[in-house]
Length: 324
Image (cartoon, rainbow, N blue to C red; front, side, top):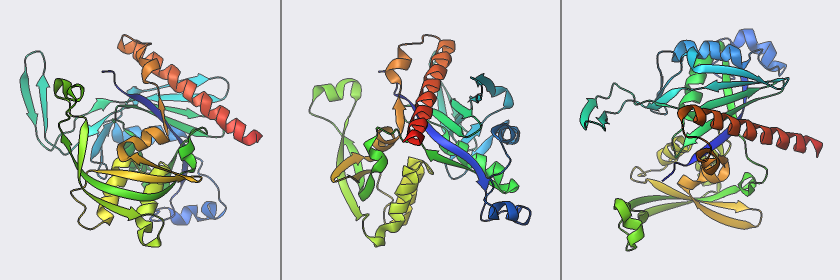
């Protein structure tokens, strides 16, 4: 089965820290005047790769990232856009890992002081007005969470932070959706009676054992509502949001899934938790990408072209908004 390949875009900006700012006295006047930091993406990369050239740990995301400067490339697109292509290695850290060599079936075991890292792709488009970051994801795997966390670890001593707001395609009805209810669920896989579902050992169906519903239209659940909103705006990843929601609820450790009810205009729609990001902000490129490459070199070329196309759509959308 082909992998699910998606692109997700974020509008980025560097801003001053309002709290715990080590340079608050020096930057107070600029903050009062509402000025943006004189700090561009090249400045950031120079600072960031000094930390990530060996390894940077995202403690909150339980992931690590490795990005030496030689894993960056840059190109001018048109007259005023610079495209940065970042190829970081990232993955889970702090968990024991077993690696099997498929040719010999030899097993290699590593302890919790290791990290399992895989190549990822980030495209950054910078022009005089904006910075757009486009993250490539294969199935559910991406590096946005650990990138953002470690980026802000680097920026904090400078009294700065990186803000990333999820880009929502204008045609996406969920862009105006209001969360009205969340139902945490404890689920487990069960064998389906359908032979097709059990082919090659697959178990597609899940059985809900217990659930916990929370009305997000009442002030008592504002904490949960705000966590969901932060995810909706792209400020935190789904995995982080789910952990925060569970932490805000008593006796919620066992829950491993959820459903969200949304109000879209006068209609209500219920979606699965793990379908949310795909429905909300992802640009599915699976079919097009798989049809256009056979080698790793062709993969990167095809992925870059699709990212450029997505960026063009974003700019066209922004131009359309301003024209209206």
